[in-house]
Image (cartoon, rainbow, N blue to C red; front, side, top):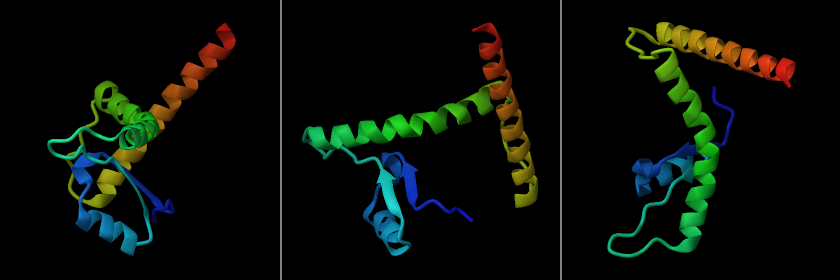
Length: 108
């Protein structure tokens, strides 16, 4: 059901097999590049990884917040229960952000 054509991941997911699969699925890879063994990373690759990191950081912070503040740990049987748990956690996170922004607006 994912309508995005981009796949974001860290360098652990970089492989020729994954890149080929993404290409076959007509998806754009935004996977970090690894440093070549025994050589320094090129400046262009380092800049590209930094740009990808700045975007991924926004999403990773949401996951970290959910894991730490809401003690999110999914250990359920079945996709429907997992989806329900994630939906409730996302709802709680969004309410939390709404309250944060409402307080900022009234204070400022």
